[in-house]
Structures are given as structure tokens and as C-alpha cells.
Length: 228
Image 1 (cartoon, rainbow, N blue to C red):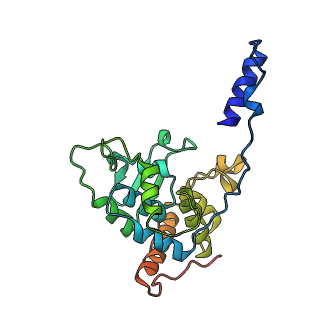
Image 2: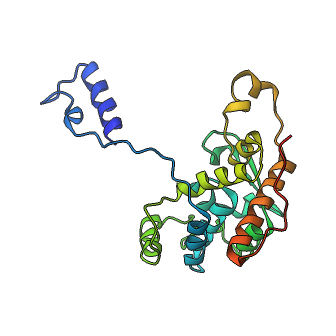
């Protein structure tokens, strides 16, 4: 907000409009930036999962854990985006403006299947507008668990980090997250149009199996991917 106001008032001044005290936003204290590097441990993931209620917020959190997608993409999920064993997000619903296919593991598909479609457009949300009650729902779940400060976005970072530890190649993780960087940026992105759908499904199935082992307290039945 501070950065946006500074830019706005700076534009106002350059346009010749006089302000009482110049760029007033520039006089405010700047909040100290904190590194966004929180990666949840397996124990913390299990704690969050177990604390999820059988409601919209609980389902959204579990899907964020299993898919690694952005919060708004799952919270505002529409029924016309759910196709058999995958989610197909149109370009207008993604941050980078590129359509995105998200393969659904059995666990993820089972979560969505619990919600009746009826004549609803959105999967979640009391008023058929997508889930929106983030702050209050987060407060309720935090009251149940004793974890150091964590955010919903940490689930996305954690999924990416843990998949890497399971042997998933970086470019496949980028494809799962729908990132346009690394191998997909610049000239490389112009010529490499591969969507890696099969590899994405393998990666998310592997990750879902890892989550299942945490919840059931047993050894994994899926062998981690080997790097070429």
C-alpha cells in the first residue's frame, strides 16, 4: 500500500498538482521486509491437514497442499474448470495469463468429489462466488494448532521444495506451478511449448503419496524420481 501511494502521489506532483506537504506517503515508515522462505516440515503439514475441518476452507487448504497452486486459483475454482482427472484453468484465471492444466491425484479428486455441483458455478463459497473468508478461517485454524507463523502461500513453496527433494526435476516443478521462468523464459520459452502433462501427473501423484504416508504413518509405496 505504501509503495502504491508513493507512486500515485509522485505522479500527481509530476502532473503539476500541488499537495499540502508534498508526497505525504513518503513520510510514513517503511515496514521491514521479511524473507519469504518458510518451508513447512512434514510434521507441520500433518498438523495443518489434521486441523482442517470438513468445510470449504479445509478443502481449499488440502487442495493447496496437494497441488501447490495459488490460493485464488483453488478458492475460486469453477465446475467448468474441473474435467475428469484434471483442472483446466483458462488464461484469464492465472497470474501469468497462460492457461494451465493441473492433474488431480486420487486424493485431490476425492476432495472435490465431496462437493455437490447442482446448479452452482463455483465449487466453493457459500454464495457461489468462490471461497472468500480467509482471515477468519485462518484465525480459527491457528487457534487449534501451535505452529510458528505460517501463511497460506507457504503451502505452495513447501510443495515445490518437497517435490524437489523427492527427485522431481526443476522444470517439471515449474510446470506444475505454472511459472514462466528458467527454461520457459526468454527465447527458450518461445520454442519450448511442451506442457509436460504426463510428468506433472507423476510429480503430483508422488507428492500425494508422500502426504498420505505422513497421515498414515507408514512407508511410501512410490519410489522417488531419479534424476537423469
